[in-house]
Image (cartoon, rainbow, N blue to C red; front, side, top):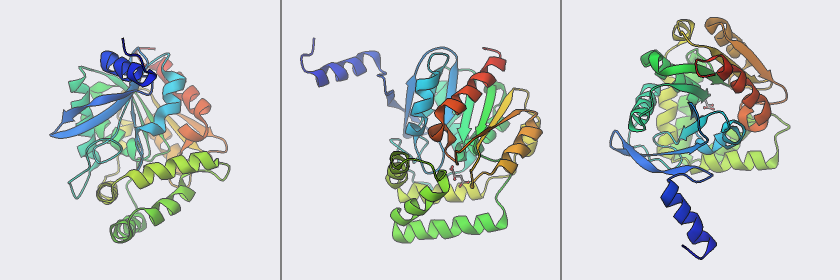
Length: 286
Ligand code: MLT
């Protein structure tokens, strides 16, 4: 038996493959290394992070929900601990195909899919291509519509800025858009660390990919599974009107999280976990 506490930790990770914080050795998907974290047991819930963040944004949801779900959250290609991107565009469809491959690699058929913001765009691309793999869909602080002309121009300007100046200025500005005024210093620092850790190349490629995404309202309207929409009361990036549009299209329940911004799963984990539990109780696995 290992004697030092660290030895014990590593021993446990190697033996059980998964430890509490859940980083699993990577799988190789479409030729690149792909990390994911997991916690809990039961039917699988797959959590897709937003831009330009990583799977650690879901840690509170893992803690709140791992009694009813095997929670899995990948670091998308180009983000977190997964391989940096060498593509000039990271489309929502590219990510959706990576996720399908991940499910295949893990031998998983159906999931409760949860996507925040860019993760929601990817969830909709996944739902369009692989509707049979969904048990339920939760769209959190996201939208089904495409970018307006102004939003597209804003993405080009942001990409140029990150390519020219690096990530720091962009990260500082983005924090102000991600959370409500009431968000703690810790939450802001945590998000900033994630944004600054994302390679500039991935940030630029993802901005272009989001710019190219189509309107997927019709996909949402045609989905044969229960859908829930969650939005922070003060979300300025995906406002309540967009959430309402999705809830109406999907015939799903809309939850507005009081005093939260765009990062509602971190700003009010209890409210978001409650909305997910309610949704999952309507899916085929309960
Ligand atoms: C995100 O949080 O994923 C992004 O803000 C989405 C976007 O820029 O449209």
